[in-house]
Structures are given as structure tokens and as C-alpha cells.
Image (tube, rainbow, N blue to C red; front, side, top):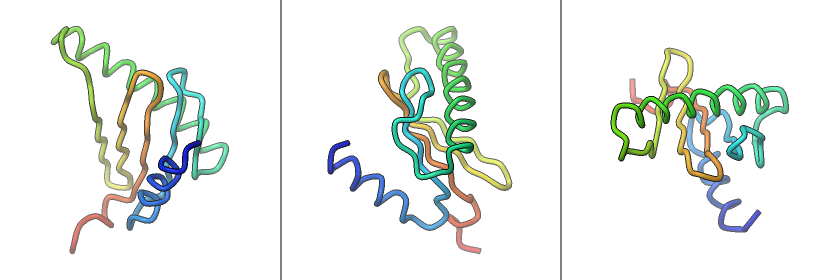
Length: 101
């Protein structure tokens, strides 16, 4: 992987609250991950399926549109997905760490 990609991953991974980063190919297979193997497989597969369904939904509603970013937030986790044709970048973080309380 290129040095620029590694630098970007390291920069993202040092942000407060980031639990992990996964890069998956279009089939949901991890290319790079900072998470455990089991978490990487689970998140990579499920998020790839979710992203495909979300993209199909958007295409059905607005054929000319593409998804550029997805953010899913719950009380315990926040998942950010940047889908591209060849791969997707997935970042998991603790949502309470990005707010000041």
C-alpha cells in the first residue's frame, strides 16, 4: 500500500474515539484493517452488504445519484463509510468522544 495511504490511515486512527479502520474491496474482503481479524470479517461483510442495499435504494429513488458517504450512529458506536467503485473505507468510533460534554 502506498505511503500516502498509510499516512492517512495513521492520521485517522489517532483521532480521539476511533476504534478501528477497515478498507474492503467491492466484495467485502478486507485489504487493510486496524481491527482484529474477527471484527474485520464481521464488519467488512455486513457493512458491504448494507452499502450495496443503500446504493440500490438511492438508485431506485434517484437514478442519477451515487452515495458518497454514509454515517450510522447509535448510542455506543458510529460507523462512517466512504464507498468507492473498487473499495470502501470504513471507520468505527465511539460517538461520545467527538462531543464536548
